Image (cartoon, rainbow, N blue to C red; front, side, top):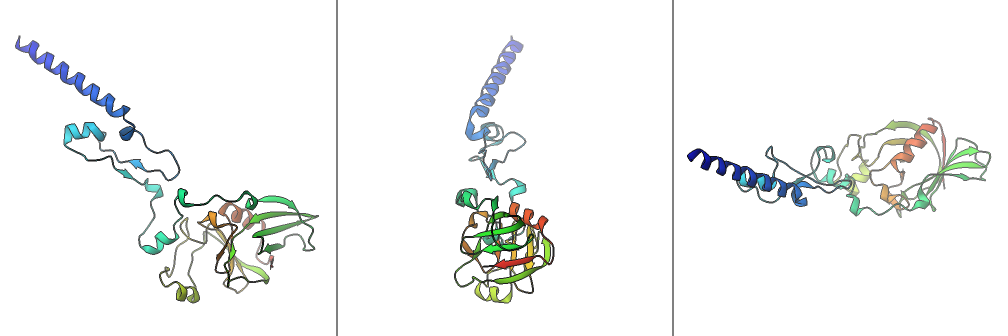
Length: 241
């Protein structure tokens, strides 16, 4: 009889534990995580977290969420936060007018020339025979616009960034140097214009394309600057209007 009583208690305990496990996995607050870019994912203990962990190992508190390791910024400091890509929900949509397109072009510039239309926020790579590839760009904010003719003097993939002294005077909070990478404001590629401080470069803020935002540089979406970079060479003529 003693053995029967023990067996009944064990069976009841197993059934209760099975019910609790099923409840935990049915509870979306415990088992599910947001499924959108930049979502947070629940930290799980070896016991599985949530209700079962509370019953077996004590009160674990509310479900905790942590950024996936691949999305965590490297390093620390206010300058990295200032130049890291903004959360998806904070970014405005890119106007479809600024998406890359093959267009008609009736200018007199020769094939291989880059033409920057500053007022309309477009950059054209001229193919000749009345055709060009058009890219949406971000340009200098008021007081930083410029025009002229330059040539590409250097090209760099995932370039480092060293703010010039003039920029540091305006923004002493900026880092003195940033290694190339996704958080770098120069983006995936840079094409340096003559001996000036200006560049055609990518950006970690694609939502700024189509705006007057820079200190005179011409910024492009990373996919676009990679495409343009593959087409041009050192010595390519750049006309900024």
